[in-house]
Length: 336
Image (cartoon, rainbow, N blue to C red; front, side, top):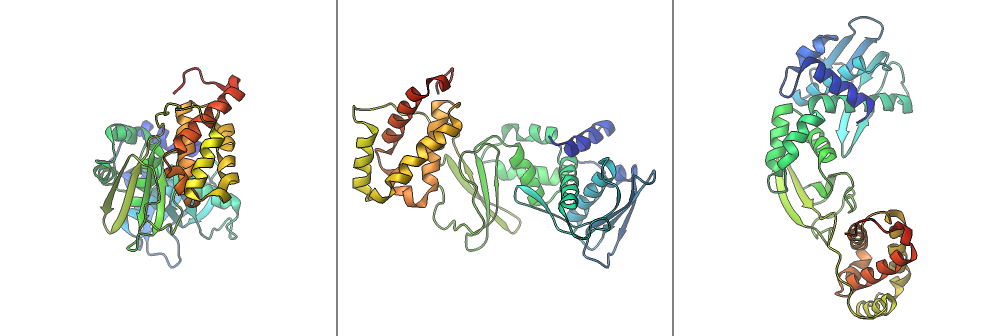
């Protein structure tokens, strides 16, 4: 948890608050709050930060109610975070798995790195204030792919947060193995989310989901939140390691695969991927490494025929065994 998130957590603890609670009442303890029709493109303004006992906060009443609520929590972040000083004009927007800010400021009109940094900190403060990690963890204890939509709706209802803010917090708190894509009417990705340490690649914007982007997954569902459509995948983070079969060397198996698939021109790429990935994760168990290698090959559109070949697993297992013998000091204490 980052320092600004800890400030939000401690604030909730100090006042003994969990969602749902009266956010405006909380903010009013620390600042004078007003709601105004802004003549400029901004969500909120904080004035007199660290210069008076009660700074002033103004929220743009022309924004949607959910966005006003997030902005109110965001401006409270500016008040509470010790190094946020002076006057700040904020335009907050949250997308993907990152907080993005793009706005003008009385203290930084050029939107430089320092300003973007403090706005990101205020966004993270707001997200933690509205959706506390400890509270969310209790809700997510029994989450699975089939009750995922129901859990999301519960979090959104209790915290009164937007879909994107909720998805960001939820995916940061989920165990490895979850990927979600928001898609438009043509099944093109317009936003994506992935839980930490998930071994597959995160879908990039404008990925076409008309055809399946992942070769290997455990479960998959589609769901809707309002007018937005989503696809959710769940992956095994550790695929069971197959037994090594026969006496053929991995080079002989690879030759057979390349002849069957016509991928001789890809020999160098195929050979390079496995040892390179092994070197970066060799401290993990064999089953985790095997899983990572399989997913890495499946990411490559040009290597789909290779990874779908019935002998590809034996190629990976035999080569992994050879690498383990070559680097014995990295053998894990308990083999997966």
